Structures are given as C-alpha cells and as structure tokens.
Image (tube, rainbow, N blue to C red):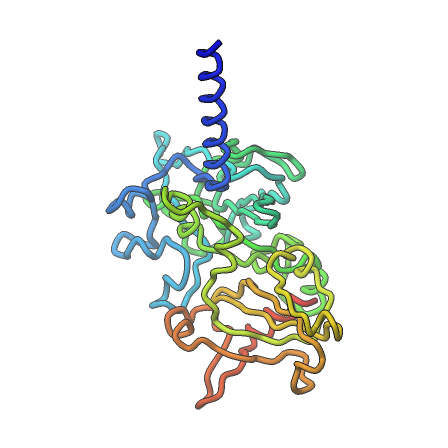
Length: 338
C-alpha cells in the first residue's frame, strides 16, 4: 500500500509538472528544425534573403532594406530534401486550433500557398500562418492538435524573384486579427487592389515576434504568459479614436484597461497603445470629458526612441517638432475600428 501511495504521489507530481510545462509552452516549432535554441546556430535555423546577408534578414522585424522593410515572421530553413533538392520537411501546427483558411493558388499571394490556423491561448485569439508551402494536408474548418502535420514545405510565391532551393523555408507568423469585417472595409476603402483572401489577407494580421515567444517559452526560470508578453510590448505611439464599438474590443477584451471615470460617465472613445508593427496591445476607454478636440483620430504621443529603433512600418512621421500619423498609420486605425 505504501508503495502504491508513493507511485500515485509521483504520478500526481509528474502530471502537475506536465501541466505547468504545457502552460509555459503554448507554441511548438512548426518544423523539426529547433536550432534556434543552439547558440551560434542561427544560420542553421534562419534562411537569410541571400548567402551574403545576415541571418537576421530571415527573422522578424525591421530587418530588410537597411531597416526600412518589415518582415512579419520567421523564415525557418529546410532540413530535408528529395533527389532534386526540393524541401520535403513536414510543417506542423504550432498549437491546438482550427484551420481557418487554406490558399492553394500560389500566384494569388506573396505567401504562395499558405495556411492560417486559429488558436485560443489564455483566452486570446492568436492566428498562426505558414507560407511558401508545396502542398497542404488540411482543409478549412478542420481541428488540429499541436504537432499535427498540416503541410509540406515548399518554395511557392508570386514574387518575380523565386525562392531558391538553397533558401527553401517555411515563413511562420503568429498574429492578432485586426478586424473580422476586413473584407467589407477593403471593398469600401481599397485603392483598386484585389483582395483574393477575404478576412485572411495578410494585411489583416498584425504579427508578433515568434522568435521572442519561442525563446521566452524556453526560459526555465520564468514561466511564459502570452497575455503578459502582449501587455509588455514596447509602445511606439498612442492614438485616440472616437469609436466605441469595434470587433477588436471583444476579441481582445483582456487588453482593454479599466478607467473608473469612463465607467461613471460613459465611454466616448479609446486611447490605444500600438507597438511598432501596429499591434494594439492596450486600449484605455476614455470619457468625453477626457477627450480634447473633435478629430475622430488623434495622435497623442510618440516614443521617439522606439521609432528610431524600428521605423519600418512608417506609422508616424515627424515634421519639425510635430509628430503625426502617416497615411499608413491612418489606414491602420481605420481598419482596426471599422
């Protein structure tokens, strides 16, 4: 009996540890390439834009065109190839979720053939994207588990410069959805462009840095929290919008802050903190008595250090001592609050 009790206690401890590990590591690598965790092996993990470029050009952020071009995911290098040198790596779901979209027409997107999966992590909707695939093995509406094979790595794209065999990779993103009425907004505000992907157009997905997330999950000392990771984003700017009912508020209710004054007097708008990639990570309700001016969209403040460190999304611009939203910044806020 004593031995049985010890075994049961040990099993309970193991299950508790396993549950803790699961909570700390909600995301898995989308391929068998885990070289990110090996110091000095960045070129084994990332596929740079060319052999003479730094591995950072395959990472997330303002990493291209001398810091002026955004790359919104990780280009994870292939490890397996067939006789012709084509990539054969399995691409796997990063977390449990539901397949929302599968594009099998490579010519319709810079992503080539790509898949979008919806996940719920700590009550937050996160959308993973896997691009440049050669083939998909799932369909929209299908439920998947973390680690399930969803596709085969490829080199598909609609860009004039093809992805060479030597830099075959999966482009991997972790995103927040901007607006589930994006297709309607685009139809109303599009400038003659086509939208072949409805709500699953890449412009409707604002990316987080998967590298930071995967490394933070790997930290044995500090448990990872996606919500805290989001709340801890570095602010590029704050924008006041005179809008009170847009889908983002419900989808990401955990990012909406408390304001007793707005609770008492009623909400007349939201002061929204954006990171340099346009991710709205803190939304403060404001009462009418707290809002100055009549403009529907007002730039409240800019973190100049962050702007100079990461200028590539071009959301704000400085004229003399005055900052203002660019056309891209205005477009981002209109899209968010539509």
